Structure formats: structure tokens, C-alpha cells
Image (cartoon, rainbow, N blue to C red; front, top):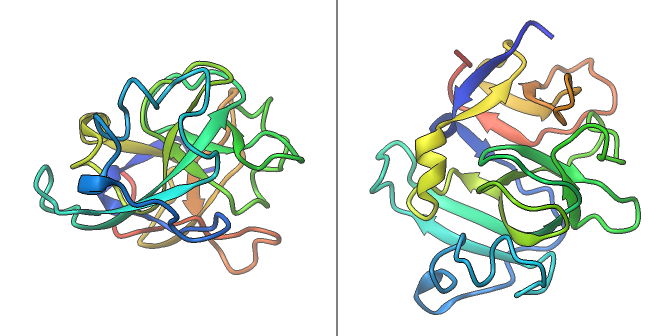
Length: 196
């Protein structure tokens, strides 16, 4: 790693590597009280089918640089997620929809799995909720993403495809550039700007 850095959330477009396409349409385009509503996000019992996806059009009202489609996926945590914009991957070889943001809990090696989702908020261990899994940052639907604003990188991200690099200090990982000679890596995002 070149060193820790960040890239602005509006400069990241996630690639949808999760199975199946969007599977849910909500009246008005979003679940009741939005994707972080208290009756279905960060809850002990699943309010929706785990693994289902929903796609919305993010009009760029909050941030004009972030207009386009965003996809969410409903997942369960396998350890506490401490903040919005944490990179998460499956924590179980038998259930890909149980995710972790810590290196110790991620069972699928973070530099070979293409499955990655981004937390929308802090979440309790073993709870259910929505994660951003594809498209532009959904800042018009999740205000915290625009407030937090940055995704961790390895300090070497340039414009182009990125993968999830090896974690350090307990973190699952950071975005790093996808290089042609890196064995067994899969792209998870496209950055339209270099990191800071």
C-alpha cells in the first residue's frame, strides 16, 4: 500500500457484482422513511427478504455531481458496523448475505471476492439493513453519505477501475487501483477522480 487516503464519495461508482438484478420496487421509489428508516434498517428481525435489491434514480439534488442510478441491497451484519461508508464483504462461506466490515470476520478473502457493499450508517451486530451496492452514491436518499463524504483508499487510486485491497489495523480493506498483473482480483468500483 502506498499509504492511507480517501476518495470523495461522488467520485466513486460501484459495480454491481451481487447475484441477480434489482428485485424490489417501492411505492414512491423508496421504503417507508427512506433506506435508513427505523422500522427496517438496523433492526433485529429482517423486514425484507435478505439479498433483495432496490434501484432508484439519484437526481443529484443534494450534490449535482452525483446523478444517476443507485442500487441498494438488504443484508445482515456479522459484527458491528461503526459508521457510514464502511466497505463490507461476506463473513460466511454459506451465506453471502451476512457481511462484515472487519478483517477478522470476513471469511472470504478480501482481495479475491468481488462482493462488496457500502454501509449507509452504523449498525448493530447481527442486525439487518440496507447497503449501497451499485451505481452512483445515493446521497439524495441517504443524507449521511453526503455528510461523511469519503471512502478509504490505499493512497494510490487513480481514475479507473478499483478493487478492494488488503485490510490493515482491523479494517476489512480500502479501495485500490486494479492493475492488470494482480492475480485473482475483481473490480468493485470505478473512480472518476484520483484519491486525495
